[in-house]
Length: 98
Image (cartoon, rainbow, N blue to C red; front, side):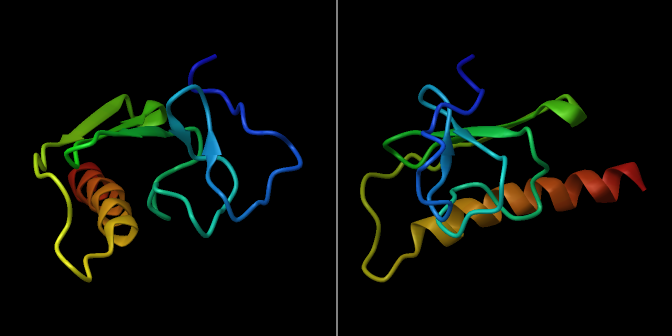
């Protein structure tokens, strides 16, 4: 239940879909924290110091990014950065599978 969609059905589709404390990859969303290449059914949680935990159940994969930094430098695009983490994980997985 924690990783199933809990967001109201009438919520703006550009907003991320949420479970209980987890971001859940379901429908495409402009403001999601999860990368475009990450498969549906995946879920992710973000920590205050930039830590990211991504779970991709269909691949039996858990990836953790230990950023450990308070705040961001001026002009830093956090959403783009955290999305690229998920996309990089999927890209690496595809290279290993080939």
